[in-house]
Image (tube, rainbow over all chains, first blue to last red; front, top):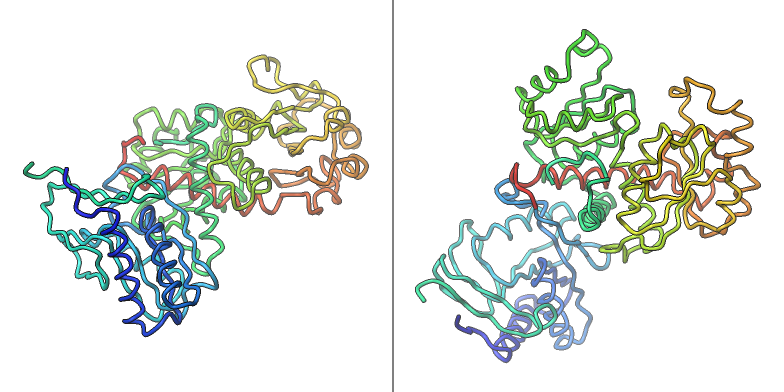
Length: 177
Length: 317
């Protein structure tokens, strides 16, 4: 097992993403951050705090569960869904930044598009991920990436976040080791 | 979960999982778009050998909101009325590619037979069998209690210490049986109140207290009073002298309702016989959960169908 990002790296990556979001959006107007459970929700909350601090206005964060929209439900044992929590008065006309920990096949994000469409019509949808490990199966690309991590499909990427796991770290294991 | 046949074999954790998934389904019911694509391409058959419009439309709404295709099969005017056996009906549904079967049957144990006979691969949901069980009704009752007690913080909670009084025809009531086992699993204390003629012969194995005097049971200020329907269609014997005497002795009338704490929930699985087991004042009060129970029924049935049908068939959690 190899540590790819330590706590300080992870914090720097999130701070940079927060700046990039504000730069691309030309401010915090209409922004709403929706994390994909479970770790995406924590990342969205942290990003929202940082974005709010830099911009000096409150940027809301919430959770978007995509379980019911997945295309692989029938291929796996039953998954228990997580709550969806959209703050304020919904996503209509807002700039939604989806937040997830690892971008891999892109299937989760594809499901997230369907889930979002059922909640309303966002003005634009962006994607922020902590780690992009490649191996896409859909034409999906993240707008904001904490760390590009070319990996083998045999490897496993673990994201640890203090709120859930007690520490902040991204590790990689398996593969040729 | 492969089938949902009874609450007696549900563990506390399984029950809480089901109630938590129902919370997510309830959140979907509050959106503008109430539909989920989750069971797209799956077929759910409502196989009703007994008339029940309420339960059938509740299951139908649940399946449709999960995007499943729904086929309604009622015994009246069908092959069953021509003498077809349950086995042949089941094999017909199997040949049509049913992924889930929701069955209501006048014989206790029919859903179990359907699920275990090997006639059919579909997941089976018991929607009421004879005088045995009606698990989704008990689940929606527990869901309603949990929501009233804990509101938005309901997820993961059980009903530890909640005191529930169930009043009425315990003998014929599958709702009472399902509630007894589920409430026991969730940690609630159950008291059953009925005329002695409407209590089953042997209830020694039931995790519930039996009481014959409604006023004594209500004097303990229970958290929940659940009134059961007097099922005229099952009253083939003389279980009580007449309906007026029943209403006076075992009905939740205006006087008894006025004595209850304002926090006590009044539940009824519907359809109600107003003036018999429940007075209009109690049924229409803010303490009544009757309409919530109907709305929650769809959420709970969505959760059951989701847990039974969304995963790889044959997989257990």
